[in-house]
Length: 129
Image: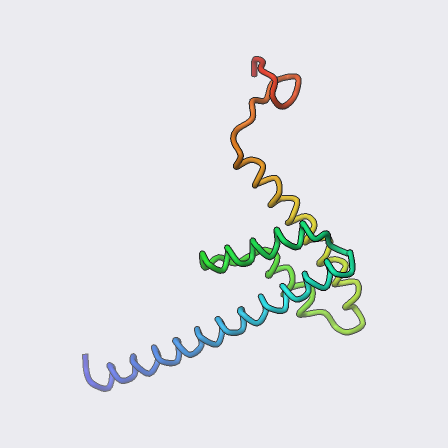
């Protein structure tokens, strides 16, 4: 590899690292705005306190695992792109999605408590499958 090629690769890597850092900062900002919005929705009663807590916890744990959280994606898609005229409708749609995500998180937590035996009479009953 020539010195010129090495310099070019080093420059491109440097650009890539700057872009990566910019994207990380931008995503951090989106997460913070999303959490602030969840707090406001809960404060107004549009979202229950329990659902807000589940969603914020999911954002925090997802961030710690370097995973993208659906709540943040929904916030970015529905609210970050909304014009002032459509903001109220977009916020309501976001709140609806948050309730769906929170219910899914609740169901996921109840499944982690242990398997249930499902029979013809419902949970906790035994039968042939």
